[in-house]
Every structure is written in C-alpha cells, then in structure tokens.
Length: 384
Image (tube, rainbow, N blue to C red; front, top):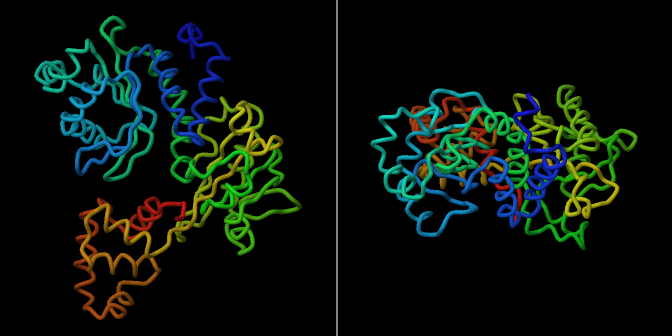
C-alpha cells in the first residue's frame, strides 16, 4: 500500500476510526458520529448504513448522515432500481472485499437514462455512489453507502484501498450487533447485563485466560460442546477453530486496527452439525468497551444453536412459507430424514418432496444443509 494514498489518514486517525466502528457494536446510537468520520475519510457528503430487504425493495433498518429527510424519501422511491443493479452485481459473484462503485460498474448510457440519477442524485450534485456490502443472504443484505459530490469527483484507487482496509472491521461490528442486544448492556451492572443475553459471552485477556463467563456461555462449557476451558484458558475443540480463536484474541490485545478478518465468524462446530460461530471483539482502545471489564482485552461472542421451532417460524415469516412447508422445515431442522418427516406428519413422501422443492425455490437454497445454515442465521440470538 502506497503511503501517499493515505496521506490524509494518519495511523492515529485510522486507529480512532476503527475503534469508533467497534464501539457501534455495543452502542448503535454511535453510528451517526461514526458515519460522519467515515464520510470525512472517504471525502463524501452523505452516508447510509442499512439492512435491506430485496424481496420488497425496502430498507428495514438504517442510520444516515447528511441526507435530508425529503431526499431520503426520494431515494426510497428508487430502491427497486438500486436493488436491481445490486442483484445483477451479486449474480456476478464479486470478490468479498470489492465495493459496488457506480462510476466503475454502470455503463455511461445507463447512468444518463437512470431515473434515480436524474430525480435524486443529480439535483444534489452527487456524481458517484459506493456500496460496501457488510453481510449478504438470499433476500437480505447490509451495506454502507457513500455518496460523492461533484466537487470531489468520482471514487479513486485510494478509496478502494481504504474500503478493503475497513471492511473487516465494519463486518465484525455489524455481525456482533446481530448476536448482541445492545440495549441490555448497562455498563454499571456488567454481570447482570451479560447474563441477560441468550448468546454466550466470555471475556478474556491476551492469553485467552477466562476472566468472566455469562450464564449462556457457562452452559455451553458445561455440556461439553464446541468450547472448553483448560487450566483457565479458553479454546475451541476443533483444531482449525482453535488456532483462529487463539490468534484473534492475541491480536485483539495488541492492535485492534490490525486484527483484520481474524476472529469474524469462527466456525466452531463440525460440518455435519448445526453451525455455531464465535466472533471476537477487541476491548482495548475504547472507554466504552473497557467498561465491560477493565482487565479484559477481548470479548468472545458465541451464537446459540438454532432452535428448531424458532428457525422454522422465522423462515415462514421471512419467505412466506405455507403451514405445510413450515412443518416440514421444523422436522428437518430437528434432524429427521424425509422418510421420518413423512411418517411424523402423516403425509406421503412425495408430498414432503413437493414441499421441500417449494421451500428451496422460496429461500433460494438448493440443499438441506444450506437450509439449516440459513435458519441458524435467522434465529435471533437474544431471547425475550
């Protein structure tokens, strides 16, 4: 990386920016301030972080910076066009760190004919849009959208390099927000707050020595699952996950800006089991995060395995499954075969296969294993 490309971004500013991103994992109200800092470094006037529903062309949740309400409402009218272009781009299977940048991807003739450009972007003097994809599923995706004004020109290589540098940290913050109900974190009552979470949370030092275990994580350790505590040291039982967790915890203590992709979605379970993931959040470098426990340098968040009924019901809501399809999903999530499902539900095996074919079509997956993984991602990790 050429230093000159980042002449405006000192190591200290970069560290502060990454720390601000991680603070958003515990306190989503800080996104407005963080978006302002991100927009400043990308030399942008406007920014959005959002969760989008591709089926209904809507933004389910979003935080914004620089967008006036009327223009934000106008942009919402054009979400079908925006999502159509992104959907086409997703189909090309781009590299995971590659941003969607309009000036580099969309043909000039398309831009000149676009109603979104004509009615929303051009009147504001916006000449380029960058979409940094944070998470993506078949029907939903989360993104950071940055808008460039004409006085700055279109995005250049510097912004591409900066986005690749920041994407792992943004994804970690968004992922941990997904497994953490930040409203339950009352720093003055850390133990009670962490015990209220359904996901497991283990606080460690740089050697992975366990400093605090919440109730959910304690149960995970007691039932001889995918984690263990050996002479006070936390480790994963599967060897690939063990090394990844050890490395991520050690790096988190030294340099939160340098942790990169390490420790995001560590796969703890065997391939044939319902997936359970761990996510490492650095705790140093932020007064907000060190309040959890001053001597702790990393927080390990462990998602709960999917509950069969929860997963089936959420798939029903998300993909408009029928009652019969939902019953088949619940049976499959419980580990039953197609024959066992037919026997339990009192229907023909051909009917089960018909339901399964419809389920695959609605959810966009093609295998039962992928269906189980999808259900595990949809299950909310926080109870109540």
